[in-house]
Amino acid sequence: MTFTLAHLSDIHLGPLPAISARELMSKRLTGYINWHRSRAGTLAEATLERVTHAAAESGADHIAVTGDLTNLALEAELRASALWLEELGPPDRVSAVPGNHDAYVRGALDRVFQAWAPWMTGDDGNAPLSNEDFPFVRARGPVAIIGTSSAVATPAFVAAGRFEGTQARNLRRALDETGKAGLFRIVLIHHPPIRGATIPRKRLYGITLFQSVIAEAGAELVLHGHTHLAQRHSIAGPDGTHVPVIGVPAAGQSPGAQRPPGAYNLFAIDGVPGRWRCALQQWSATTETGPLELTEEKLLHLGGG
Image 1: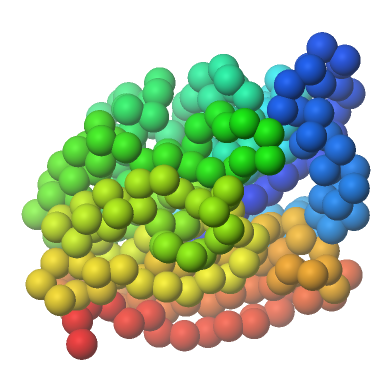
Image 2: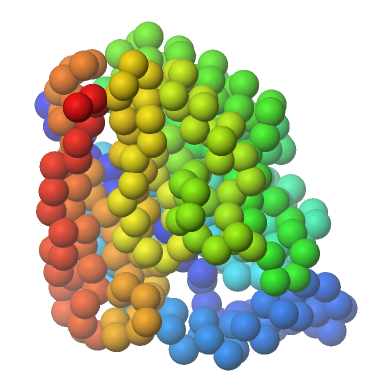
């Protein structure tokens, strides 16, 4: 039986709500200026609505969202992001992990953990209260959704993420357990765990650690956002195998902008351990109106060779 998973990322809900002078006395000032200079003109509410609706109506068994639902992590944005998740689907069918914009200033991530708890609650009934509590694990049919967090507050002009020791140990344990259970393991993370995937000030710190965990414990697929690009990479798994690492364009990116138009990825998974099959489709908003277009279709290379 085929299991399907839709992947969205970098939602950047707009427009920006009203913001006080006090809230602007922080890194938010540079983000506020950046929004009005660039993002407001390239991220469209209409495109986001079309892509979101298409993903929700795709018939996918589960939907994964890999962060940056907000822009400046304002209280009003956090409330809006929880409402957006509710509209996307019930918590048992939607999983979310935070991005750097959701941790824009110190303390914001704590509020994200509260607002998004239903979509980050593992099968053990617990939702993360800090990055050290990740990953959460959700078994759905033949698939394990394993959500990690690379989101941390950073200085102005920096959008980097971190993957560190406690979470690495937790991830190793989760991968071991779900691997022994014979599940197709999908790891969610916001920042791409790939060297050179983005510029240094936006990179993930802890790439070597993340890749070493995957090389030792294994996984079948890693999904990320952050770059707003349709990136396709792979990293080493155990015993000479390799694991696809797949990014997706920002969901609300306007057609005709410098970066790819808004899109979601749809994965179709079937098979058994050692003989898994995973097909990828990318559905993109290539025009201002109308249905999304199938812009990529491929069978992912799983395993060795």
